[in-house]
Image 1: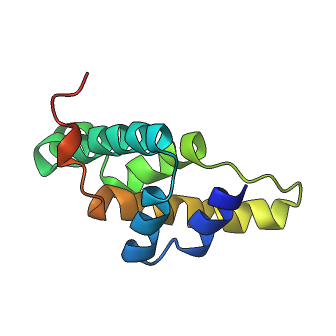
Image 2 (image 1 turned 45 degrees about the horizontal axis):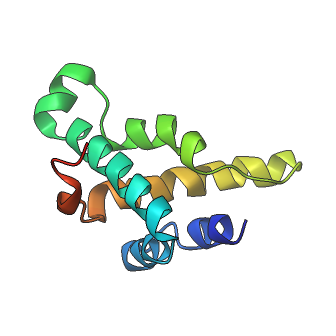
Length: 104
């Protein structure tokens, strides 16, 4: 829950969003970086031309798989959904993931 709060609180700041990722436990950070690298490949213009899944669409579809609000209040869930998508969008656009290339 602590990491979730950091994510939604830093959803509009690329430097802070990357800092949240860097503070994750090593295995979680590596898995997330591998996943974001996969999404970065999907977000390349040559793929977007075929799939129609740009960075915004990818963030909308994939954010619920990475971040989940623990609140039961529909207003908080609705507001945090936008922040979850924004956080994931920040990572797709700004996170350096080239170090995971070739990792299986």
